[in-house]
Length: 257
Image 1 (cartoon, helix red, strand yellow):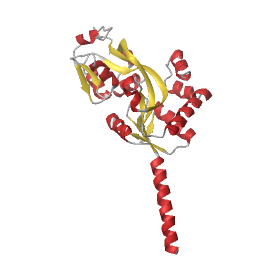
Image 2 (image 1 turned 90 degrees about the vertical axis):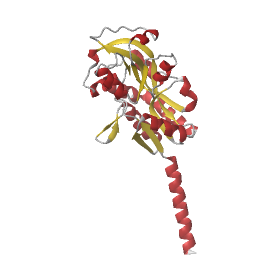
Image 3 (image 1 turned 180 degrees about the vertical axis):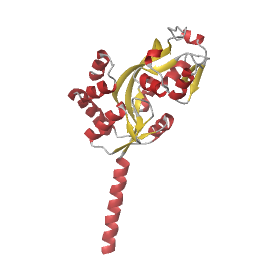
Image 4 (image 1 turned 45 degrees about the horizontal axis):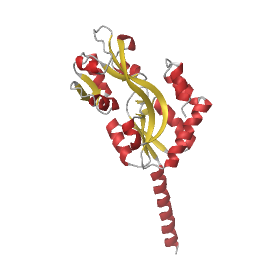
């Protein structure tokens, strides 16, 4: 009888452990300053700070992990209780995920070096600039590929694109206005060295939850984010990480329905 009781208790403990483990969130992000990066072995950055606050407010058990973008994207497409951030929300991706956000608003923009003679004002003129390097996992790559650009060259990471730009192998750099400074700093460059060309598209960043995740859990996260908008905590984080952000962008971020 005692052995049966012990077995029953052990079964209950194992079952409870399985339930708790199954409900833990795995939150994937990539090395993409200032949104997310590793500092002293721990995840940091603007998007990480927002997500950590949402974890605290929802009370969820969660693990943040930096992985290559393609790996994180694959995991979140396949597994419940996973999410990928900061993810640009686009029409082709709309039905693939459950969305919480936006947590940031920027523009995806083309830049050249100031001392170059490049002047581009449209998609059609991109054919004139030689090789155009863009990370293959970016939606920007898909968008440009749809234009039939025969000079489009897919690279594995944003860092690869920036190295090609710095060494003069490409004449244009494509970057989110919010991540530009962080990208340049990694290569010893500054925004003052660049000339803006034209905007490709708006880039609103979200937390993309897997389609298998409980919609009620996703709704709790969206509610917690709305509370951050209302109590000023999202604005404080945004201004801390993006001190040069214009007031209209901040107002738009805080007044999303």
